[in-house]
Amino acid sequence: MAKGSGGARASPGLALAAVAALAAVLLVSRAPQPEVLQQLKDSFMQEDLAAVREFLRHPTLAKARAGAVEFWEIIGPGGRLHPGWFLEHKGHIVIEGLLMVIIVVMLLQSRFYPRTTEDEDALTDKEIDALCQEWEPQPLVPDISEEDYRPEPPLVQSREGSCYEVLVNGQPALNLACADFLGLGNDADVQRRARETVERYGVGSCGPRGFYGTFDVHLELEKALAQFMGQEEAIIYSYDISTIASVIPAFASRQDILVLDEGVSYPIQQGAKLSRARVHWFKHNDMASLEALLQRIEEDERRERAPLCRKMIVVEGVYAKSGDVAPLQQLYSLKEAYRYRLCVEESHAFGVMGERGRGACEAAGLEPGQVEVVVASMGTSLASVGGFCVGHHEVCDHQRLCGQGYCFSASLPPYLATAATEALAILEGSRGQQLAEQVRRTAAALRQQLDGTPGLTFPGGPSSSSSSSSKDSSSVESPVLHLQLTPALAAAAGSRKAADMLLQGVADRLLTKHGLLLAVPRYSALDHVLPPPSLKLYVHAGLSADKVPKVVAAIREAVKHVLGPLVKGN
Image (tube, rainbow, N blue to C red):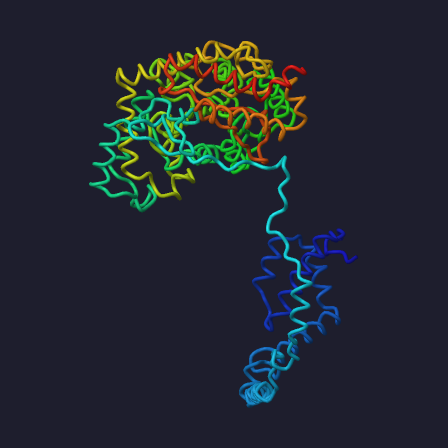
């Protein structure tokens, strides 16, 4: 290691860095660089510069610099290997000649022609007949066993002047499979408004709301819905099933948390799937299970130091798959305690439950705004099509940009909007309130009189074996009733399909013998939890108080006729 003039030993790291910097500069330059030397003088100590000067005078470094300069003269501008020199000396002729040779070779190359059927030996008539005899056609669908067989759905025709009295395969019947709870689908004022709108606007809207599909009647309906529900704003969708499936992904994404009741319907499940959020499930209407789940999520986040995210609990006011009512007061307390948002799907409670018909939230004593997101269908009590969502301004405005069913679907036909507006006006008046009160009384009476039917039970009933913690007064007012086999009878049936066939036999008996149309619901295999097989009926304004005993007697007779042997055996 060289020493400087002061006798101190030069720093190896500094000397090596200086050598590398000067060597790089001198290799690409032909002239001395006094400014570089000046910078080094200002940066390093005098003794280190002396060591650098001694190193630069080494013969090997001079040879390396000379080699770099010579290499640049060959490949640089004017050099023998530079592309410019090659073109100046007619090198382009070589390139053009190679291209011409390639083109000639391709033109002279023989083309490939696939072998045609004419070159093959034609089949004789005997060979064709033999092949036809050997051919066995395969069925397009597998064979359906007797257990898998499902009867053809009945042909239902409406009758003049009533939406509840129908013709089923030509036989008059009372339609208890109709979800028009208030019977406004056949109201003269609603039909008149729809006809007037068709004459003015035509049938379709011809575009999504964000483009040219917004009409004044859409804005009027949204304003009327917001006022009726006591909320700041409302937004309408053209299809009720896509409403909740669009609302959930608008407010939840991959990093967020959704807490769902196991009994929610398939559209809610699909919305949660489309959101890609982290989904957690709690037992149906079990608040102890929900609280334990919320505590576990909170502990996991605290332990993992998870970042803040959006959290929402999603339930139904009246569950479509069971007919019982969510304990919304307890849900509200839990969501406030654990700082969650609450989304309630009110399709089967809107227009019927609550003092004003606002739904299960009102029936539970919750004020408007305490539930952040309220969603409902307009196909139940408003005699129309589509769905709506109400909430704060931010809730609805956000969906106008992020609600998939709102942004990418044609808007609600104008005549359906005016029909819903007229039906909402009736619901707000005295006649609508009387109809809603009648439905609630009938639902309570029907449950009371059906309780104790041998072989049958229903969720929320006095004799129900459900573990639900929501057996309150509002459950008996639910307009949806699912008649299920008792646990002993379901076990005796042996399988879900067998239980379905038993209940279908009860439904067929009710239709042919008593003129009552009920439905045996079918569920998707993709459902998170399949509910027990059931016989589903809707309580509506067409089921008056004097008809309730007749319906109860008919159900008891059909159950005894079809399930009698099993009931006696158990």
